[in-house]
Image (tube, rainbow, N blue to C red; front, side):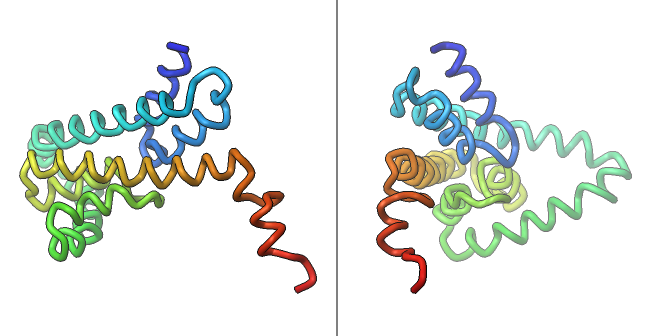
Length: 170
C-alpha cells in the first residue's frame, strides 16, 4: 500500500495532471488495494503541499531568471498570459477567485497556474494558502464524485443513466 500511495503522490505532482488525474487513477487502478478515502486524502494533501511549495519558490526563482534575456523574451509572455487569465477572477471575487480558478477541474487551471497567477498578482501568502486549500477541495470533490459515479456504473456509456437518457433512435 505504501508503494501505491507513493505513486499517487507522484502523479499528483505532475503539471497538468495533479489530482485531476491521480484521483481517477487511484480509484480505477488501485481501488481494490487502497480504499477511496485514502486515495482522495493522499492526492489532496500532495496537491495542497505542492501549491504552497510552488508559491514560496516563485519569488527567488523569478529574481534569478529575470536576469536572463531568454527568460524575458520567451517565458515572461507566458507568465503575462497566465496573469491575464486569473486576474478577472481575483478582481471579481478576491482570494475566492483564486480558489475557484484552482478548483475548476479543467486543463490549464489548477495549483501550478493558480500559484503562478496569484504570485504575479501579488496575492498575500496566507490568503493564497487558504485559496489553495479551498480550491483543491473543490477539485477533489468534483473529480471524486464523477469518478465514483463512473466506477459504480451510474455515469458512462453503458450505465443506467445513459440507457435511460440517451436512447438510440430518438
